[in-house]
Length: 213
Image 1: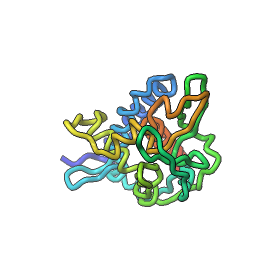
Image 2: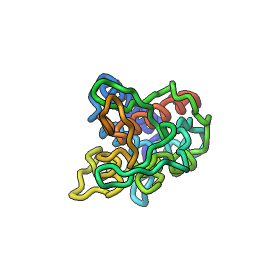
Image 3: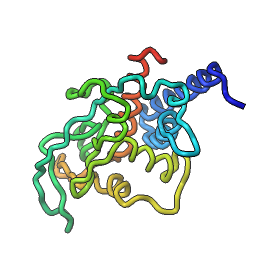
């Protein structure tokens, strides 16, 4: 039985409620909520042959503009060796996050509305598929790629027996990038988690801008 428009709008309200609750918990220090955030983002945005995104069913996904807050990725990083691996040091902090030096090292944060180099609004296709998350060996990962890794494999919706190598590197080695704070190299937390939180902010702000929510 086909869902009515009212039922789809009710489902959207429910999913947005889930997303806001998980975002609030994440911002309060529970960064494992990133997996639940990824699961809701998948429900709202990801289409397959067998399932349709909720925003797609509502007919708004390809009609609104999406806020793109990703900083450009420096195309000429400085290579150096670290623990036997070639890593690169970026001149700026690329992608969807910002850094916060602490006494114990460097913490990554989702800057939310404070991202200084936001590009403005773009089509869903560009927002969803263009590489904006740096990886090792100059890889460029998209928002779609990250949401699918976290939701389909890491536990947002499913837990797979194996995970993608690029995703494992993103979680454990900081994208092949390092920074140093108080003599400590690397990041305290996961670039994947804070990137997903920033994606959630972009989506919510885009829906509010379009007066969908």
